[in-house]
Image 1: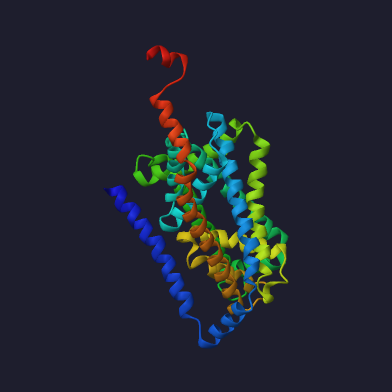
Image 2: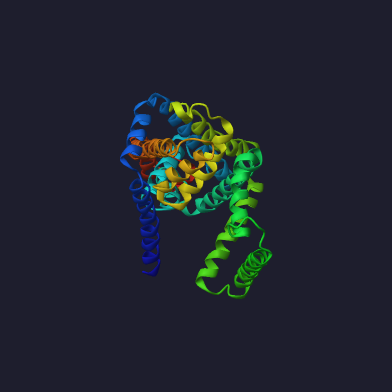
Length: 352
């Protein structure tokens, strides 16, 4: 019961935060801002959302193939189509409840393929571990390739933090910040080992251990080249979808690959912070584009355009996958039922 209450509270918090951010973002829009946003969206080339969608669908297919590669050491080889549809249904479920998709896609694949759902949990941990590493790499590329934009922005934040907005370095303030960070870091590691019996601390240790095991599990993968290729392809296609999306709106058509890295970095954070990125994704994309000189209202319109395109794609492809899975597997399940009723192996014949 406590676990159900915890899951329900977590769901409510994520959804509530997303709804609040939507309300907060829309509440600040004046009539003049609305007119500017409407004008920008009216001139948008919506046909360019087709290649954006294709890039995202291809990235999801590449994710399905990478997932299959992780299953190979266990001796499981599900069909590409069933694995792909399971991934799409997983994305659909995540729009409703955080992390439900990871469980559901394992359950779906177990239903239509001879793959035990519990055996797939390790592969999901490995996937998430490498996605986290990729996100960190994207952040580093974003910062070090655009030190003049992102670096100055971060520098201004650090300067305000260290000087208190006075412009002069406050050594007492710096010492306090370093002391606080040292205390927090030391306390964190001490709590992990000293109070490992407490439920909350135990969960943190499980998460940290799971990430480490997920990263190191790649040594068991037979097709390592394929695994790393699809990992790269997934994130490149994410990046390409944003780059193509810039062309959809006239004010953003001049932006290239480097701003795409920035949008991918902070947009990914938005997807993590709230359920399906609702509210947070458009705001973070808007704030990112403002750094590159784009107007605030145009940035907001662009952020909402990208988020709506991705969300609609998941709703459509995930919904179709749910409908198609039973249809394409009907014949396969019939054959399995006949095999169970009429065994053909030599040992089964002897039993009969």
